Length: 395
Ligand code: PLP
Image (cartoon, rainbow, N blue to C red; front, top):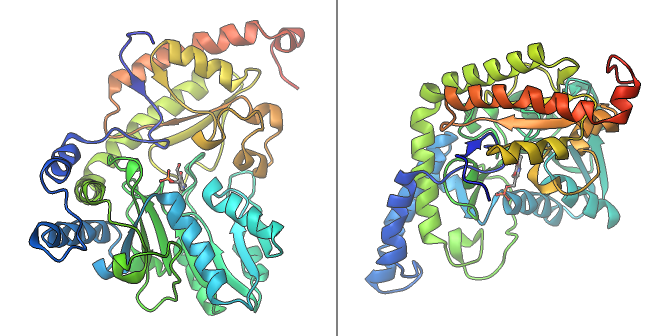
């Protein structure tokens, strides 16, 4: 490990736990470590702080606190919704989702397909956008659920969730959205979006990994995924992870308060980073439509290089970035998201995601802009294919 300071451009992978969140959690690790289901006060007194945390998470998405249940992560929330929709309507064996979902929906849907369920994976265009007419024509009387992410973790592209929910409801189909990447970055309102289910994960919001939430609209049919004790009003078994719930609540409160205040600055930094790289580094392109898009994300392809090689060099310089979603890093397969956008495998493999956050400074962006262009040039120079094409034009 080298000792250079960290320049962190991977906020879509995870975020630093905010000091305020640590402070809020500590009493629940040190002194208030009881079980909230106990009959005695030492345990029962944990109910009030849990409910306060639930209210903060609910406020972030404009839900009623009773519509929010805590889970172990975004992955569990997503798995739970798919499981529930199919378990409650055994005659409905069709699911609609997109070709660009996070693996926690995508792989679960593939698994269901292998077990005889029918799944429509809606394609996206070169900008990463969905065709709503195609979505509508995919709906059938036996469609149990439509699951479409609010914002894509790799490109930041935002889907028109309210329009999709309205369309689903016109056809009597339940609608779920994975809002793990959207929360804390753009305003979320379950009332105006009118979704039936929405997934959240705390570690994208400056709380620890291993705690998530699921919004279940009042009256929406829901079958628990984890059966056990009667926690979360019989909707999710498992002893409550009290310190993490408290941390999530505090993080949601902070995120809610600073959304309008911090995001314009992050957007300006992201735009400067993106525009400068596109201008300074020849044969660089952005993946995904510029808008609507998360204000913190840019996904850039540097033709002629291997993203993994660039990431190693960036790491040497203390810069953290990612090639596709963290869950697929390490695999040589090009990202399924970029592939679905029609990007050729070699260009997908040359793509790097930079995701900024509240901690990103102008100095971080300057540092990256200074280090990255020479690294790309060096890697291109070292590539026989690049050199063989003379002026570096890649085929
Ligand atoms: N959904 C999206 C869009 C994500 O980006 C992630 C994590 O990267 C998840 C779900 C999974 O969340 P968790 O890490 O809490 O399981």
